Image 1 (tube, one colour):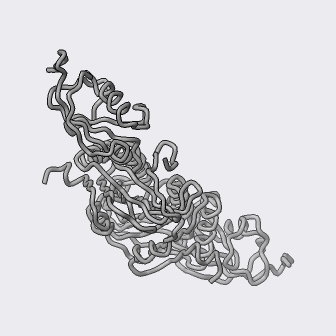
Image 2 (cartoon, helix red, strand yellow):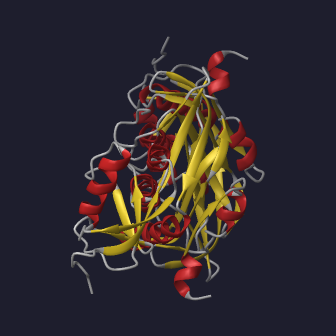
Image 3 (spheres, helix red, strand yellow):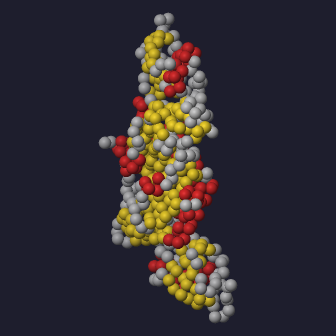
Amino acid sequence: MDERADMLDFEITDRDIDADALQRRLESDRAGAYAAFQGWVRNHNEGRDVDSLEYEAYGPIAVSEGERVLAEALQRFNLLKVAAAHRVGHLQIGDCAVWVGVSAAHRGDAFDGCRYVIDELKSRLPIWKKEHYAGGDSGWINCVTGQPR
Amino acid sequence: MDERADMLDFEITDRDIDADALQRRLESDRAGAYAAFQGWVRNHNEGRDVDSLEYEAYGPIAVSEGERVLAEALQRFNLLKVAAAHRVGHLQIGDCAVWVGVSAAHRGDAFDGCRYVIDELKSRLPIWKKEHYAGGDSGWINCVTGQPR
Amino acid sequence: MPVNDRSGIQVTARYFAVFREQAGTTTESLTTQSTTAAELFAEVSGRHGLEDSIALCKVAINDELAGWDQTLSEGDVVLFFPPVAGG
Amino acid sequence: MPVNDRSGIQVTARYFAVFREQAGTTTESLTTQSTTAAELFAEVSGRHGLEDSIALCKVAINDELAGWDQTLSEGDVVLFFPPVAGG
């Protein structure tokens, strides 16, 4: 395994995200700080009751762009290790749709690096979500407006 | 259980922190974002090789002040739930000394609230740490300078 | 090398998410006079009624993200991505 | 009510972390003329060689964090906290 492969890990998966296993990949004797983020499917958006969410990704580019984001974070925020995973498929309320974790010597870097990764993943990866509403209808979400369409 | 007790949870413990159990306390159908921080014992500080860390707390005030910090975070950052735990005793490299987790509807609040909690816990709680060095000597850490004394 | 004589070039277009639903197809082969990704988007967008402006969308050519002004070549696979919404 | 006649008041002082090591004790009972927490700290600090300035330290009285200018009362338990370093 080359050094970069040991420092970053990104995956798109149609199974439950195993946060514990991902976290273990971030361990380092030099790490004093660990920051993590999870995006959970919530029961409302823009004033509507949401029943479930469907995620679609274009895998080849989602993975290459995801790895690019993690490499940028490693370098810009002096991180030791970084990992992230994004679910695809049909998710229910409370399910984890995306997980990001980073380790660093100091906590400022850990928070800033974790925040950078989730912000960039959300705006750059070819991933889309369709909300299914309590009324039975559905709509694709536009990340620019946050509104169904 | 009153409403506040359902929204925040702080503990000082001399056992391994059970991050999974704490995270489950933060679940909410209204939560779209979960942010967490862990402080790990790292193998160096201010240029010295660290072997282990000893944490001492004054429990009664550490708990009341910890709960006050969590209540402040709930209110200031529009969080849904918040929990934190701090280890005491003799910890080894890689051990988790402190854990903070928050859930919120949106990720900006989750990151800001989590950061607020760890910053305040570190500066306000009566908790002290003594570093044990590779050479066999030891020193209490001063949070103001970060240096042993 | 780009080819842009009167016979046009043969490319494959792929549609994702809301674009796939609007186009009613995931993939189509077409012969086009368009020379850039933006021109091809305008062409298929008009035909299929794709609703978004390219300012909010992304395009990839042969599995690499590309600029809208990138020149198309014979055989390119052009992926049209509506506004993304991960997380 | 604070008591400050010549006989002084009886209080308990408790020391933590580096202060405990410098004082060589965790707890002591003392009769003092000091009227505030700051005065009591100056008194015990001089005797035990506690190294920190009160600007970096905290004090609690009867298990509540207190200001250094808080007036002492008969029977108070005064906790002296050196600079904290959690996390």
